[in-house]
Image 1: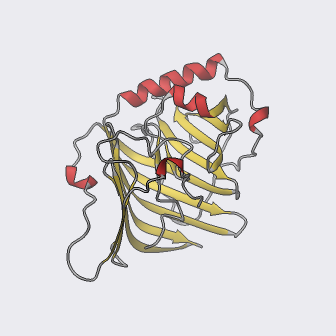
Image 2: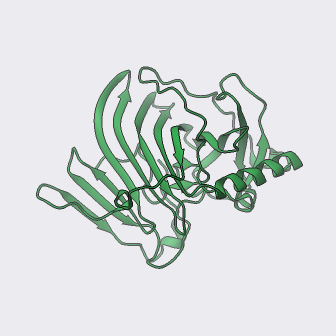
Length: 280
């Protein structure tokens, strides 16, 4: 089974909903990352300002209006120390709820300027995360929360993969110092750029999270993360549709039927609550 860009399958993180009015061109030739972040120590981060507090209130209110979301997805991964760059294209579907559900399906991979078809799907049904590789006939199903419990396996700061889709101001300020960044020519047009730095004593894979929100709708456009190994991930949601009816079968994590499949099932470990997800 090919890992999701070496992302730990133990958890995804969904913060807020994407902007239905912001569609970005899909480049399939070169990988042009946003401005490379310069990490600042958490202790040096400024205190939250009233302006940032107001923005977080607006972001949470906008997220509350999103029940479903469907979008084109572009995921870039830059491992600078190894000189490795990858870009994946696909679709993303999300259903709000307690718990939320999502499905990410990738059908194109771009490496070193060369594109090829792939067929990788990652589906979370509220309890189980399924990874399905149609080309290699490999299926892995991992339990993220106990049956009947409303856990938070997708909480920001607890996953190496961050896609903003259910932001709560209180949760963010409890784990991060947040500041408003100065506009930059590399920013998506018409966006507000927030920089999140983990607070002292917070254990997480990310050392910095950059979030870009549409300044009118207050819904996200782009997410960039940096980890301790200086690996960068950039996620863009494009051609977004919100509050449209989704097929319930999209979030089915049942194992495939038929011959030729390698199937692996991992129930929730007893010490899962004390186990941090591995780094990419």
